[in-house]
Length: 167
Ligand SMILES: CC(C)(COP(=O)(O)OP(=O)(O)OC[C@H]1O[C@@H](n2cnc3c(N)ncnc32)[C@H](O)[C@@H]1OP(=O)(O)O)[C@@H](O)C(=O)NCCC(=O)NCCS
Image 1 (tube, rainbow, N blue to C red):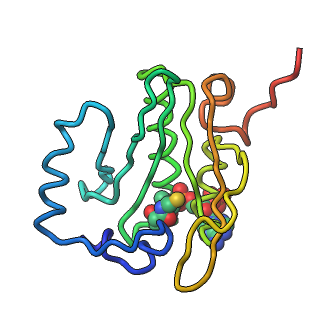
Image 2 (image 1 turned 30 degrees about the vertical axis):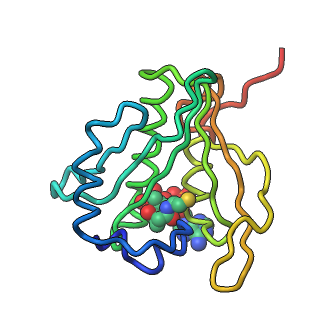
């Protein structure tokens, strides 16, 4: 609940929903029954505490594509956990599930998330101009994706990998 009803997190994820505890409990209790999406809790090894969630959803089976979302509990940011979790989920998406494309949208007022996505290999594809209306302001969203051949090349560490040469 601290994650879901945090005002800053709501802004960064563009969610105006007010979450009710009973509905949230029912939602998380039903995650294991879903066969078209993957909702995972992120647990910090050192403490055993749940620090966030990562999700593969909007599965497009014919095209081997899905969307990615991530959200951490306020107070856990900036310790590398988001980057590590993103890389782990992408590894699962490409190496276990055999997906071809994982994509997301990130708002212009969220440079921290964008940095995490770039570090893990997401590439900006284009801008959805004025996609979000937030407190009277129109906010752009950038579409980003990772494709399977890119993943095979850098495995989530594009900045530490020599770029592929065209042949
Ligand atoms: C986005 C989120 C998952 C990232 O997880 P995290 O654990 O905080 O991220 P990390 O510590 O792994 O990495 C943060 C990176 O962003 C950088 N960063 C932090 N603030 C930044 C800013 N204002 N501008 C640019 N980069 C920034 C950090 O320096 C770090 O990069 P570096 O390793 O190159 O130094 C987490 O902050 C979160 O849940 N935020 C709220 C919800 C949200 O924004 N979800 C995504 C919606 S698209």
